[in-house]
Length: 368
Length: 167
Ligand SMILES: [Zn+2]
Image 1 (tube, helix red, strand yellow):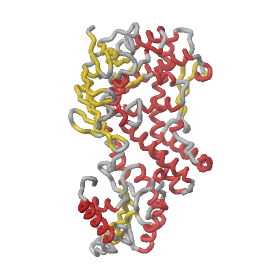
Image 2 (cartoon, each protein chain N blue to C red):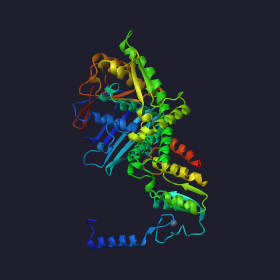
Image 3 (tube, rainbow over the protein chains, first blue to last red):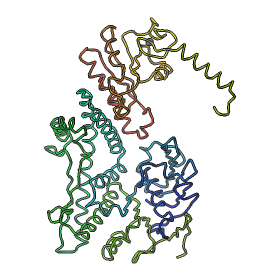
Image 4 (cartoon, rainbow over the protein chains, first blue to last red):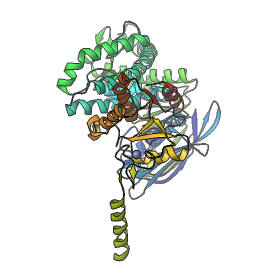
């Protein structure tokens, strides 16, 4: 899939913008703080319906305006599709309306039309950073793939917030606690099943890519999904059963500590290098190599499982890599359908299909 | 308000006071009413063995408008939502249990919204009521109600299926 047109109105620092991206590498080049990342945020939002930079999405509305509009034309295997997303300020928050081919649609039928994989400098801490980053990787990929996953994730999050508020209030109610736990088991088991399959596919690709990156005789990268609840087998009934047992065992600690201690909100992905935990033993270079392998693997899994290539969004990440890793990364992307890259300069060994110069919220296509 | 005349503002204030004086809650179902018991509760043609549990008084108007329901109501005054400081004790659940023991009810239909709080409230009521032998059922929703469910499709389908179950 690829975008043929992108238009923004009152989004972040852009009053009005329209551009026509090409197949291959599209480069947004310019000094810092000119609005390059805003363009990637807009593309990601058109795909996922959500900002990758903020959960307070009214922030994307241009100062002094009440409404931001994003639209794009995309070519997908099924034909052409026109996407639109409008973010309107409402009270202290915002309300979003999604459109497909000029018709308003619900989020579930919007999500997944155009899929994106984003790679930002924050992702470079995927291995060494907090576990939220690793769960976010699974959630971002799986929510785009399946509205059912998104639904389970949203319900799970909501029930968890309510159960934590119930525990904090310190007024024990066995019936209510049981109900929250049952709902967490139903939604949480769905999450863990999907994550298990996803990480297995991700791990297989990441290991292969890492081997290519470090060459023969190098270390072996392994990824392991470490669910908070481990069933006798990775089947739904076994996971749900183990979930119930673990919740029951943790009931007293949960009441004492007044917080939910069991479930996929405490899942982990473990990175091993030759069987040893990477974040304990690895150098910064090894961790970066692992991150590159995982992001490329994520792209590969989404492409394979979705039947067509997602868009790849690279936010100023190439300049963070040394020459060897950058060249390897770009070589892996040689046959990619469409990539959007932000950078302060044209990165060495990148052959852009189109260059857009970004300066003070205006863009200009550079003649090649 | 600022641009209106003082007279207009006073007239509005009088109207609000008049409503406040006339309107009260039905002592049986807690609907907003001018007479206690309310018109629904005192209508002998309504099915006295059926109670539809709703979160707010306004939900009664929505269901009445559909014309598909001929039983009684019970207004909880909200849904269980600890993050908003609303636990079971803040709702009219005790009053519902009292009605179950004093009225000859066969079925309780829980018509809270199909979101996390509405579902938890429905399940909670069904656990409390189950020992009495009264049937507790849940509306099967075709479409989600309420703003926080802006995704639907498979999910809605799944929930409608779930809704078919007697709780
Ligand atoms: Zn009444």
